Amino acid sequence: MLKEKTELNRYQLDKAIKKYHDNMCKYMRMKDELDSLTAAASTAQYGIEATKSSWWHK
Image (cartoon, rainbow, N blue to C red; front, side, top):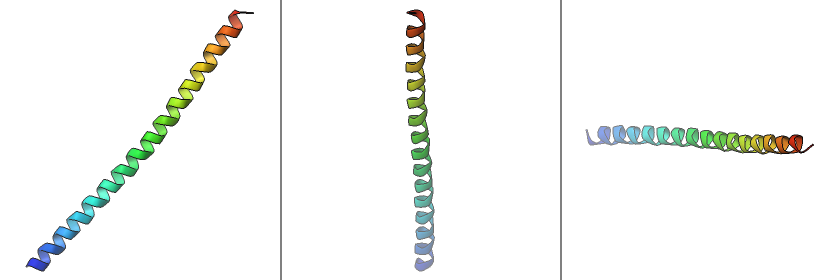
């Protein structure tokens, strides 16, 4: 009985760790994607502002 309970707890712990790991990996991928999109948006905004200012000054 105790051995079965220990194995069940170990199984539940392994399952919880795997779920945590999967969620952490998913979070890191989403964070990397967000950082990339933020950098791209910032670069695009800078390009738009530079284009506007150079076009208006001509």
